[in-house]
Image 1 (cartoon, chains in turn purple, red):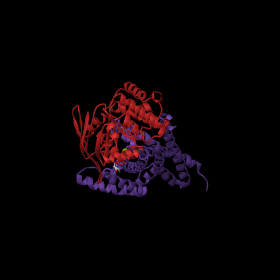
Image 2 (cartoon, chains in turn purple, brown):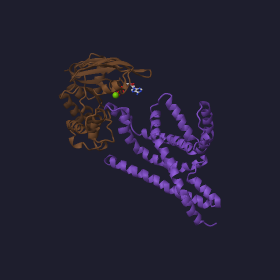
Image 3 (tube, chains in turn green, brown):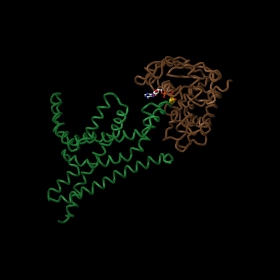
Image 4 (spheres, helix red, strand yellow):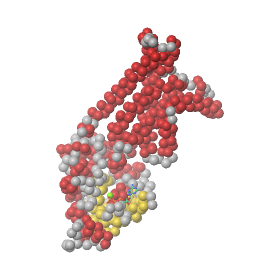
Length: 236
Length: 252
Ligand SMILES: Nc1ncnc2c1ncn2[C@@H]1O[C@H](COP(=O)(O)OP(=O)(O)OP(=O)(O)O)[C@@H](O)[C@H]1O
Ligand SMILES: [Mg+2]
């Protein structure tokens, strides 16, 4: 078996337009999940009566079931349920016309929220309750105390697992293919299928994901370093 | 200057504070004594709304009263402005310098412009003898210095009353002196304090008033002179005997 370099180059060019889509899924999910995951973690830590157990269940659901199963459920069952609902409510939207990307963004945001809520929950537990209490006695509101005292301290414990979660998300984003979204993995599969160049195609996918992964890690390291410079002496 | 009346607090079925009332007079240094578990910490925490009491009223001499059980967020915030709180283990913000620890509440909660807050903060640090440590983070300070920053943070906004919960009991013995000296200096300046402490020399020499608690109620409220000479209650006598090894061997 020989490596078809021509195909490799051709496919690399064809796949480029798919990369922004992958990055969109990653960036959008993170943008939703960072605040929502944090709020979920806080709500669970505070043991709000009905809310905390409900959130705990949702998190287990998202974390404890394979993503591929979630994808099939969301992609197949949700449109059916929605269309029944829309028909009843008299809303004239045909859900089967909805861009599958929206379903993908929905599911990945939800899934990432669950993951990050666990990251934040354990990071929050590294900050003693006394920090919040001291802030309250200084007159800060609870929200101010979180923003100015608790979160900055929490980020020290959260930054490494956050980076891991982002890389995990990047890798999982290749699953949007199963929802009919043509991301870079989708493009590669089609391209490879034409001339049966699967080996080259998957090798290409490997390289691209590796590069993207380095990119994500690089961004995190940059943010981390900037945060650290802000508290340089504190690390002593 | 402020009055706490009929305060009650339970944890589950364990009633820790039982219908307790106490007046705090301006300029007084009140030392709260009592055996472990009698509710001293809980009382201080209830006063500053770190715990929610089930009943009781907090009233101020300049008018206004708040129900502990039902106070809304805004009322709690208003009350908290009247108190400074010094924790047993200082609870300094570990992501802030000594000066930032003091100015945080001034800038964020009281909306004092930063330059002014910094000036107030420096003055407060100077009062506890730490003018030269303003840029140090808590983990770069000794235990005694940390607690002095904690005191500076509590006094900076000039609250009506400073609540102190065993400010020296987490410290190595050789570090308690510097903290007690600061508290003594504040007392001499007329700062009103309600302090839980087992430092008997402080209680004897600095306090204006000793409040002895047991089982969630105040069972003796007198001057240090009267209290240490001859407590009226047997429980208080037992307590002193345990804390002062040679108590009773001499009488004043
Ligand atoms: N968060 C809590 N949950 C349940 N019980 C509590 C809680 N905090 C305090 N207690 C109980 O309330 C009682 C009074 O505790 P508190 O800490 O006020 O005592 P203390 O007088 O400060 O004792 P010490 O001298 O040991 O500090 C104790 O029996 C304690 O077990
Ligand atoms: Mg205590």
